Amino acid sequence: MTEDQKPMRAVRSFVLRAGRMTEGQQRGLDEAWPEMGLDIAGGMIDPAAVFGREAPLVLEIGFGMGDSLLQMARQMPEKNYIGIEVHRPGVGRLLNNARTEGLTNIRVYAEDAVEVLAQCIPDGSLDCLQLFFPDPWHKKKHNKRRIVQAAFAQSVRNKLKVGGVFHMATDWENYAEHMMDVMSAAEGYRNSAGAGEFSPQPDFRPVTKFQNRGEKLGHGVWDLMFERID
View (cartoon, rainbow, N blue to C red):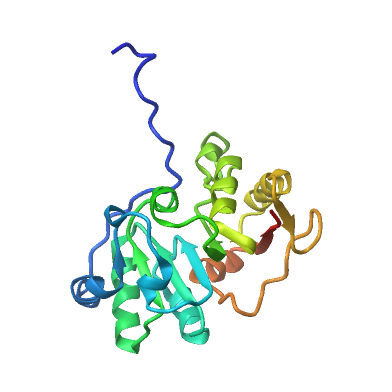
């Protein structure tokens, strides 16, 4: 195989960080995963079968340690939530806390979100996709690693119902502007706040650890909400 024939390596939008597991986090993986964990190997899901009910479906990419996702699932039990996170201590923490609280409306993938979307989430099934405080890759040479790109916007659109919302938030102004440029040019979307406008933070989105940290550093916070219109 020549150099030109070698398959291109996919550009990842995340860094897989090593982290020590606490006893509680490991317990979440050991005891709650069989009930709440999902795997790419399982293929395309039927959300109603996964949750045992029909309900609005929200998917969050990169939930970190899971505290804000847990809070939303607790406060809005009428919705079903799927979280995707590659950091296993965060997965374990969310699972352990959800199990302790007896929440039944959370399921989790510990996989690459791009692959999960492609292989596991049915088209037209999501009421909302949440992407809160993704890695901003703020160095210009790393901007290509940002997850919000034109192709990703269309992958998300395919998974949303018509009327469903792609909700993003960041505390990096340059990334907020990048998101706005990408999403404003994306076919099949409408900015819920109006062309070129950022959305006020909705009441249902908890203030995250990353938001608190960013605000202490003097960063602003920008929410973008784009609705699938066709």
